[in-house]
Length: 331
Image (cartoon, rainbow, N blue to C red):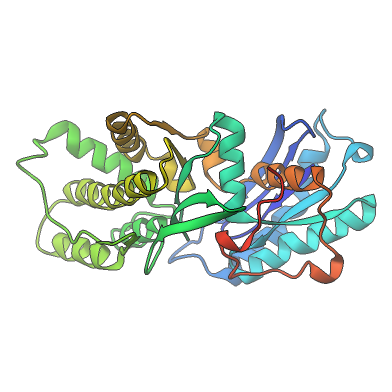
């Protein structure tokens, strides 16, 4: 199964065999020279990098075009121009190789690659990425969104803050470094800086937290201290909602997914919370937390095994596709 990911800044081709064993994956990340991601510029990047990435994956020892059973692609959600690039490539390869085309839900793919990699069975997913922040659990043949951001995704918030401080995209990893440095060199209890705490029932808001952090910098607080405080407030709000979802559903597994799940501090918070509940926290390797073609291939594999395919007439992208729009037909 070949999977193509192109929802935002990453273009990626990945493969899995029909038993769910992962093999090659090749990705290229669009990094804007300044500002955030412009959808058209990111799509142009994907167009320029597609042939090299495809050539790379086709040159691996695992690849044999005669053994490709289907081509899967991210149908949504995501940035429209970027999604169209991946969809166009997938339609072409499906036609050339005469194999089924499978459009998949990007958000659900994060769940399935996490389950594939960690062995968890029925988790609550804390999905923390650039464009999304959701707490998800399966019920009645769908992944239900139990809580989500009311404004911007947590990764987007971190990147926006980083950009105001001259930190290039992606800003999350550098914020983590600065926060860790602060925690090592200071008494965090004595230097705690309050920011707005954005939990509203089962939902979360990050825009007020972001604005307050920017103002704290203007007030003369160090960048390291604000990075630490911003992480603590943002991650704690996510973990709180995830714990409430676990209590409500009775599930005892928490799965982290999305690019922000690479952060060691949110992983630590998840472990602490789950240990206190008698539950267990899981996350895949970092390369499977970030957007990647392998996760698209894995969900495509599951759909293909139950006979699902996408007709060409139904293969239009859907930038507004939600997690709970996709029916679970493969379990």
